[in-house]
Image (cartoon, rainbow, N blue to C red; front, side, top):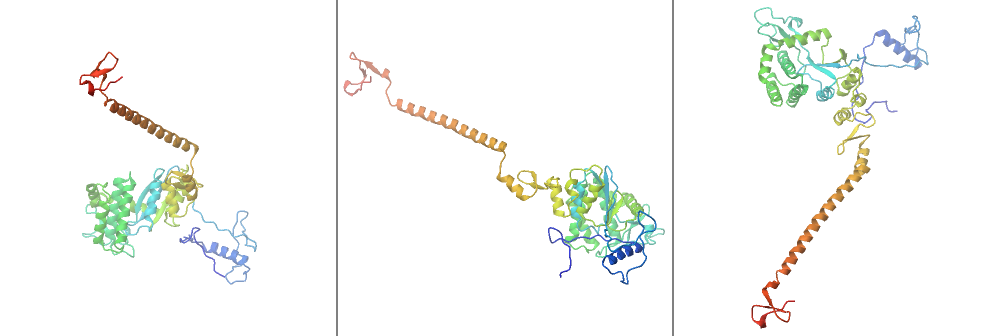
Length: 408
């Protein structure tokens, strides 16, 4: 028979299964339970007399053949009035689905606080790169302040041809942009996404010289950024930002691309739906968007939820022609083919108004046409005053009697 397999319910998509590191004792207990249930107690992997502590007593218990094995994985995120979350990354190693993460960030911006952070080490914690002599000891791996000699270093990704200094400088650039426009995070996201897209389009392993091209392109597409302030920040003023993020990284002990929600590191995967789930769990007062965002696992469905403003679980689809939230596209078609009583009333009223207006115009036109015809007819006759009156009651004109016509 075919082996069991997993697939997404709508077909075709990859499924990400979380992995855990377990203590050896806990893992052996689970293994014992499974072997007991499968009738393989004599298997060499079974450990005899292994008892697992329970909530009833301290002696523990062994798995039995009928023991139900339930393994539950969950993340406990502190619930707060205003959730805060952080994205940790390097400018040369961003999450593959950064665009979707940006949409979730913007969709939740009214009730969450977001802050970007970068994986930057202080030179004193980076293998002897602290600037103590006349020259900086690690010029290729670290960026140094000419005023304070403070250095900050980064390890470039394996696929990148740039050195650590270039990564730190771009990290600093993006931190400076954030410090300047953090009240409108859309501007920061726009620059970061355009920079990352440029690198992808031109090969992510490009040399540092090509990064300047991507920086210029991202800046041209982000005109709201004050270039003079940015230039001043990346030269020396912004090193305080690097110092802050380096200390924060050490205190949180985060050294790889990660998400952190309410100070809890999330290592299950950096995806838009997972971020949305975590943010929904972390909020004390659930906004309407949590109705759909907390249960969606596909990017397309989550994007539709946020953009359509249809937050009810049973009506997640938005009809574009009517802005009505419905269950699915079929309901949307039904709405377009039917019409409410109020709609019929206004349609009839409109038709009557048009017909009445047309009738009034037609009546005026016919009346004016009749008046013009009467005037034309009367203009062909000679006025009565142009004739004299005979004794026999007939009028006669001033001309010869033989060529006049009497008019009664």
